[in-house]
Image (cartoon, rainbow, N blue to C red; front, side, top):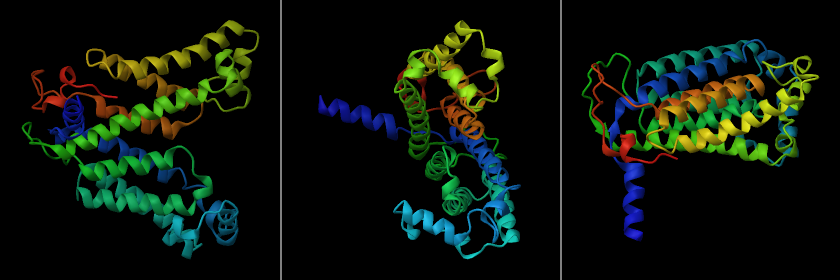
Length: 304
């Protein structure tokens, strides 16, 4: 029995997969990273410059209060408070995102982008949210296998075990993020009572729903709140079924829309959508199956 478990474990993680399976997720994740850098453009000096709200001394005191050593949040940006250098760092980050998305430089450009993201996230650690740890993890997975450059047109690119590992890491992380969101919601009574959407709208944390639209419509509130829970359960279940995986991806997209629209986590929703692309199957022209290893075939694998 243990031997069978080990065989399935190795097949799940280490069977070769076409490198092209990582190309589209890489492009999408790098574009989300570019949007993440761009989102700081208008507010970077207001937060991190000499007269900003998070000057170096104040930030270090806040870290000390949280018992976080400065070396744990290393960054060259701790040595400057120049607004020009902050803008330069963001602009260089966007350029790195475009270079990594194209596939130029392969692992080297992705490694440079990863360090660039970590350096900015560490300097603005007080502002960190859902996006930063997930983005860092995704870039780390892509370093294992970055996929093919955008100009690579060969339909017969070789399969590699590194591509299988990177793809499984993206898939597993995506599944666990949805599961974590579901469990956190089920830990609060408001979702069991069907009031979750109401409280999000009342707190002004929804981009799609306003409290005025829900007032006087309890059935709508209850229906939307329970639908949010149901669609997450369906996404988790259907993504594990090879025959129903397209439906699972569709439910995962609805989950991302909920995060981005209802819960006001737009960049995190975009990143979740980018990670969902790792579940998509590759096909050649003529609708023939892409040359893939057994575990990359949804009929022969189970993806968490």
